[in-house]
Length: 478
Ligand SMILES: *Cc1c(COP(=O)(O)O)cnc(C)c1O
Image (cartoon, rainbow, N blue to C red; front, side, top):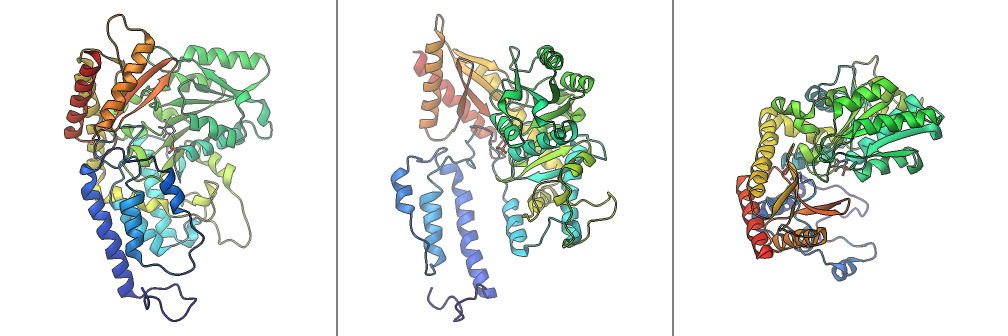
């Protein structure tokens, strides 16, 4: 590496040849890595305390060549992880991470334009506005809806709670009460806390036998709080829970919210993009009625981690929450025609999250992406069908979208036996190295779950997953 950098000791610039060389080296590793994914264990060795200690070092004062750094990353660090990008990964909510997003990140990081304010890079910001408009169309939100690309679903929910709070409570934050089911994602409660709504103002609504919020119990809780002098302001429902894939009765919750003047936020971090497929919209009936909606492109749109999204029906309410002004800033766009990210969210300076979404949708075309989303559901239905007819396997929650939960049982089994056997089943499947699953606990029952949402989850992996679960459950039952 001696001689790689210019003699000027403060220069951080590279020559064209150097950039080509560095870029080629990195891209070569990336392509090798992606090509090797089917052979990699679906869960790498994550017992890595000693290795992590060995990584600690003081700030490096001298330059290092790229190749050994890439070796460290690709040979040592990346393999020590859950292989979330692997085709057999069906744990948690997989997303995969389509390749063109990485190219978009390279371009946006290299161009490094300022996209917080429309007038500074109007054409680039317009591409991000397009993406939000596409989402708005797919979710059938009205034209005045506005949104925001965020780092993930958690930040989308945070902004939604904040917006609802500003609009409905103003300074009376502590009078406000919020409602969510016992199956709501834990990040939603954290987002509420960030937005100043503490656990003592959050009412947990019970679910029915299929893990869906009970609207009668929601209504009852709202009435009780009204009588007690609280100000019910926000109901949060799930368009696909992470535990079992349950879809709350969105239409009924929307009606109850409207009747009592509550803001209805729908958490679609897992499920919202199924609404992009017209034929699947009946599964999510009522979703377009939401006051706000979390979407997670890094799940249902197959993007790499780092992209969430929020849509808010009343775009003006989102602006009222975030718009500020400083006279040193460039002018804001006139009227409402053009979208100004910094007036719709908390960030001023920001990366350019819109490009990775825009480039992927343009490059693949929406039709192909919709086909991939619909395929994931078909594969989950197929897997559930095969497993449901397997002796000993009980579907606790059949798939509505592309996620389902099950457990192992046998005649006369206690719940303890079922819980332990289900855990063992999962561990044994994971130990075989090709399929990665995760479980959850609902009340006192442990459930194994399969979530088909990586673009790399194809028929082949589903067959393997079903086969291995069948073989391992046979072993446990015999
Ligand atoms: C993943 C998930 C979240 C949280 O989103 P992040 O992108 O991880 O911040 C919220 N709700 C549901 C239903 C999820 O699946």
